[in-house]
Length: 428
Image 1 (cartoon, rainbow, N blue to C red):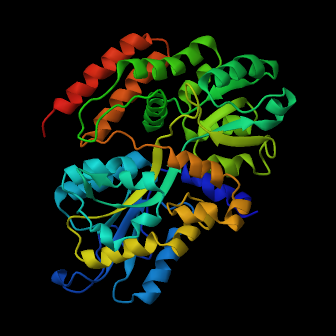
Image 2 (image 1 turned 45 degrees about the vertical axis):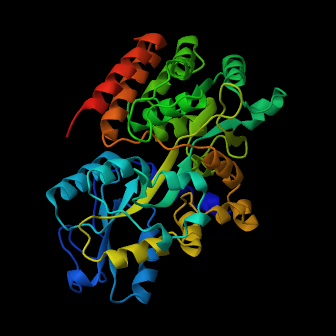
Image 3 (image 1 turned 180 degrees about the vertical axis):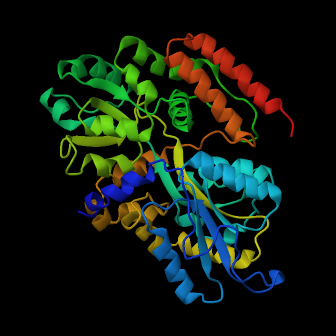
């Protein structure tokens, strides 16, 4: 099946490589020759994190063949999200014109829009009605559209189907069920109960935010004000901290990012894993100890299905783009139905168009699509803030201390509230 053959490419999406390059023979600082600035049309550059699956170049070649006067040059930055963001923000702050179109993490949209680095877009130019509804919210800021969703992502709960079947159990739909099964069944098989991405980095922000959202809380309002509900935050953070304290979350999981957690599940060392859809292909590969022995369901919550945080990326036009009309047309092309199907089949990435998830042939080749669709439809964006990086750092530090048993959840929630208020009150 194609989704198994794409396993190697899918796994590379999460790898961290500290080098970048520019395809199509262009140098990093070069701009392609083109028409006059005021024409609105002409050659462009598209900046993205490293395309390790190698699918994006051929997609752009299709555009270039049919638009010889508006060719796009792909500029690949380091695959590390932090380094990609650093290079983009350095260029944008300088007012340079190196990038026309930016493929940005969904969590950066608000920050880039608030800073004036990306231009608002006319929604009528894009078929937004055909997208999965929650993803559109990740592309808006202050009531305006500043980007168009390109790739989405939502967390799923992977579970050992063979073990649960043997025990006569169904996959958990609530935290209580997850906790009971992780605490009682996993030890009988000599494996860990549950893990996510718990190293203090962006992945922990995602896991912690999902826990707070699932408990019925929020962290920030759309206007950036702190809306952290103490009761929901205590419930969510307490769930994660209790797991480590009681042993059904292995202490080793406090060092896990996406790849470490995927490998632990793939090696047969976990009963349950929270991870992105890309992990499905790896766990189904020929070198996996759990191939054919696992399933995936939406994340559980306190009383029923939980809430995932939306991942993925959006396409935005730089405020300094030389040819914004061409840039808008390219974004419409990359988010069209035919291209979005190639994003899935060639890039092993979750598309944003709703129809793709209901195509019987694609569902046969990518069995996780119905679960992913359900997860995306009930997912929510990460907190929107012009200072998102600082918000994320505060969440990471506080939640990791709680999980490492350095602070009680009550104390951690009060500390997190203080730190978020301090971030929100900073100027400039």
